[in-house]
Image 1 (cartoon, helix red, strand yellow):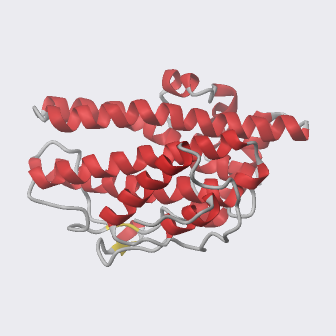
Image 2 (cartoon, one colour; image 1 turned 90 degrees about the horizontal axis):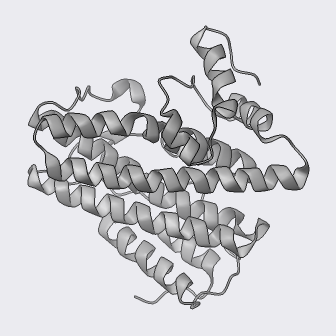
Length: 276
């Protein structure tokens, strides 16, 4: 396939590609071309307000999503894998949007990091979609959550807010819940799915770490204390409470220490509102 000549244009091309296999191929090709120095480090393209989406899955608001259960039955495991595939499909766009939208504000390493994340997310989606086919399904066969792009839209104006919400809240939540999900798949004897989810979990620790590091970079440049600033941004841009239990050890490996989230979690679990 013929690629654009600049990284900004290439990121936009990923976001405006709707077909899942084509998006995966393009994401990988862009990452490979960037590593090889074949794309100019120019951020000359406007990122779309929303990415292109395939006709399926049907996107529903959270309150209309069917209950999946806890993944004990084969049907429940298939539904959970489909939901995770949708998250990873959306994460491809989130990563390339971060690189294309904010890359010009940072050292080159920022684009290196987020293009690498995008390639990881493309791989995650591909292996989950392939695993779904062992259950007689494919991505798009079931409805999916419609709200995953909201965090990107709400933080499109502010790189610090984007880092605070997408990797440091949404992806960090994956660190909290994935080990239990892996254990349920193992208990059901579904070791292929468990291995896929463990690989994704390991990669997501690194992704959360990338977001945390660049958030810290912005705070250091502005002479702002990171944890209180993060708490303010979460209160302003994140819809909902931060719910324990937290995987403190995995979060700490990513640099997301308890001084960030424990004060807000204490407030929300006691029924108080988050700061705004």
